[in-house]
Length: 584
Image 1 (tube, rainbow, N blue to C red):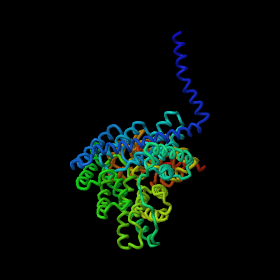
Image 2 (cartoon, rainbow, N blue to C red):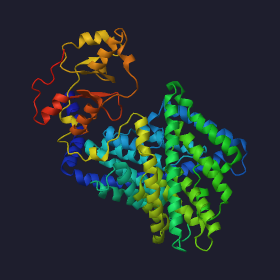
Image 3 (cartoon, rainbow, N blue to C red):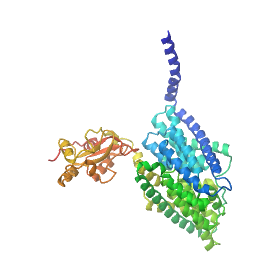
């Protein structure tokens, strides 16, 4: 009797889940639509809470008339404490948030954990409140995408649908953080997804509008910046805007190169130093803030002053230089925060400088310097973030003035062109690669799957241990049909070695050398499961190998299988016909 009651009770517990599974299977699109609206509302409220928490916490750490020692001690202490928390509890919450969101979308099946969402929210709030001059928009993107990911997985959506929710959450976050719903849609499609024609367009628009409405409901109808109306004084101004674009492109390329170079150096330090590496950023900001308090924080207040002509030329020059160094050091050392907001700050200062100088030289032909600060914001954003369409629409939404579009397009286009020539790889893509994450390019994302590596990949069977000697490796591979072998184990690959390289080492008297000693760099030839077979052939030819390890995009050393030249050719209907016989 008791057993029967337990079975009946169990069936009652299972009934709701069965009903939900049936509903999800029969009405998945409708559920996805409702979930989109829910995500927009939740993300909007979360971003508002993020903004309020950061501002109020910052006001307590830096009260009006506070002692000067706070400007040194608070950033140092904040970066040190957050560095430990990020390493110990929230390792995925470090950095901007945009590269991590793209990594989750393309390399981790849309998975962002709830712990990462909490860690990103609170660690970034504390970091920014302590005066570290990084932005809140990038972290908001990861938080928004994380909320979407958690909800989608908890509700049992298919992995494809969970992945589709990430740009939905990202758009909702940007809409609330900037009060720019149209720019949020473009950013999610242009930067996060990388496809303006993505099928999630409708959901992204709906979530962005919902989040924007939630932000307006909670914070009121106040724009991020109060800006004057734009007027074109003389056609000569277009030349000044082009010059601003040139300077913006140079500034953007220098910013990206310095940040990436510094980040590379920090990554080379021993892992045991990771928890206090952010101290370098905190100390730099603290020392600068001791003498120039305006360096502290992302500085939207000072951007607003520049947009209304309230900053002196010398102060803008000083802030441009100090903020440039403070932001790059803070981010490269591992503090939590983004480069979205700082790029706008740097652009506003640069534009204000150009506008003041142009107005001084040509007072009758040039508009007020404040307008150049506004265009400069979009110019730096287009050059650093490489999202020119988002930049134009974002500034338009901020000003609500259509007349600013043409100068903005001129300056943005020039900046984007120069920056992309001097720094080929976009900064978010480069930052992800430094973390060992290889994001797919647009051509890879457009593949239909008929000619992808995953169609022909197989399990790795012939793997050599890194501690094996050259002679042992040659003896073990005598009967192999290949000329290339992986070094590592069944789950991990650390390198690739060819028969030619083994024979060369043997000739040079290195029979007793370990295979690990043959590596000349940390990288090795590899391929990803979603890449094309033609590209695989190109990579095999360039590396002169007949076997490539198939590795995870999230971790280059995580082995998923191998792809052989023989298998690739067979997929095209070409048989080996003895081509792979080992030459003696």
